[in-house]
Length: 106
Image (cartoon, rainbow, N blue to C red):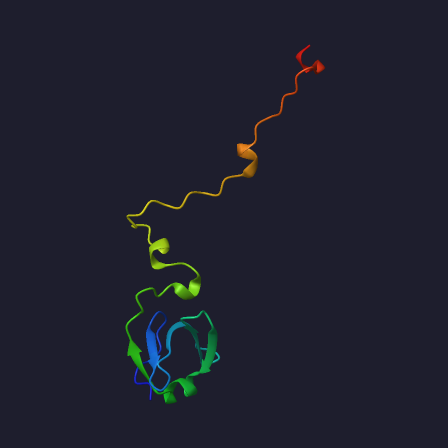
């Protein structure tokens, strides 16, 4: 049984399956809890269902942002690594063509 009240940002582990998930939203009006698994899959649970789940609070995984498609290092502005180079416009590397013998030089 879940002994912890769901709070946004808290991580839990399903005791039976070992699946880790994060609470990403709580809808007090509809009494639902939205969770996101490490693979990015979202699920919505009724608050009554939450209270019967066999789960325990868990520490966030080393790379808790993997479900969002970015690593924690990419999210962190304090990263000591140099930023990734910006995408270059392919047209920036093109040079104009010149042809000898044309009337452009007149």
